Amino acid sequence: MLSIEIDGKNYQIPQGKNLLEFLLENSFDIPHLCYHPALKSIGACRMCAVEVEGSKNLVTSCTAELKDGMKIKTNSSLVDESRKVNLSLILKEHPDDCMTCDQNGNCSLQDLAYEYFPSGKPLFGYLEKKKI
Ligand code: SF4
Ligand code: FES
Image 1 (cartoon, rainbow, N blue to C red):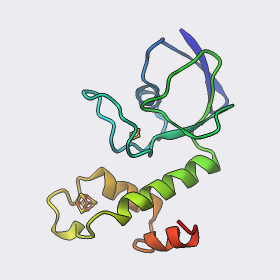
Image 2 (cartoon, rainbow, N blue to C red; image 1 turned 30 degrees about the horizontal axis):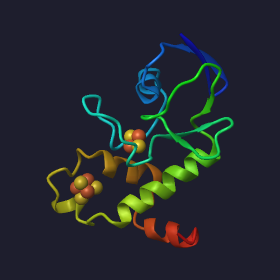
Image 3 (cartoon, helix red, strand yellow; image 1 turned 135 degrees about the vertical axis):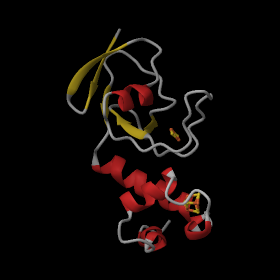
Image 4 (cartoon, helix red, strand yellow; image 1 turned 180 degrees about the vertical axis):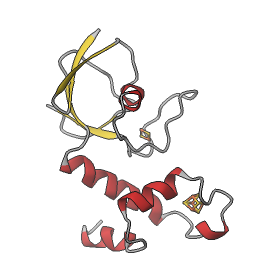
């Protein structure tokens, strides 16, 4: 077992456990678009990234290598900002036609867009403001 601190609380996590799976099983709200338990994680969407103490960059929880004594933050302002930027970049390249899409109403990307940008389409304005 590994002893890992997550958002200030200590957890015992079996060696080799996928961090994203552990977080989801323990009711942490972690957005994730490219993870599937039947497939190898490739860390493509970066929506599941978390802060790891001592790490220069945010770490995708679906590919994270867990180490004993790790300290993780899942809900810091840095994590929130990263989710918004990543989501905006994904949406920027995405067709704007939910109303005619078969996935309408049953789509994780659509759900996240509403959750992180409840006022709707000024999504791209967000990137412009950030000069991305
Ligand atoms: S419903 Fe989902 S997949 Fe379809 S256009 Fe909207 S965001 Fe894209
Ligand atoms: S779920 Fe997409 S990078 Fe982890």
